[in-house]
Length: 213
Image 1 (tube, one colour):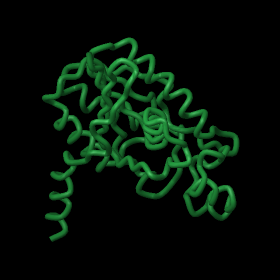
Image 2 (cartoon, rainbow, N blue to C red):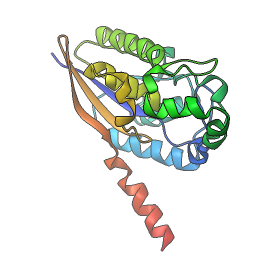
Image 3 (tube, helix red, strand yellow):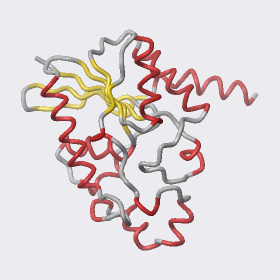
């Protein structure tokens, strides 16, 4: 019997646009982010889903809610899939962090698995709690389909985990806003059926292009 896990990233926030590190700061979706969440909801409207989980951070919960309201379902918040704690970097622009933490930033972009965020987490911390949460969800919902709405770093850490690849490959995995990933669990085996799919965003891209004409 197959247990399907649909992993989705939250919609865009203003801080995403600005290049500001969010981490566990509770930011809202931008106007575009709400549109992305709405399109995600439409994309999954006719997909059978038994349960919906989201990180407690608003940007993830609001994205999950856009799906849930079309299905008259509830969103269950779960701490284990929240975003990485960036510590002192949270709230700072990427260029500000580069100026103050140059060498550590370089390590983050070249060898992320060995970086300890100042007063925050490292990727092993994130992967450990996220994978434990994922295993619990799979065990509790055997044979069902579950939507999980989470965050960029957390989703990348999960994907590395299920593929059993080193976290040094973290940056080789892309997770766009409101992307869809599908994992299938059969016994103790996990296979990835879909990765970083954003086809549902075509409508938004077309609207933006037409507005620019």
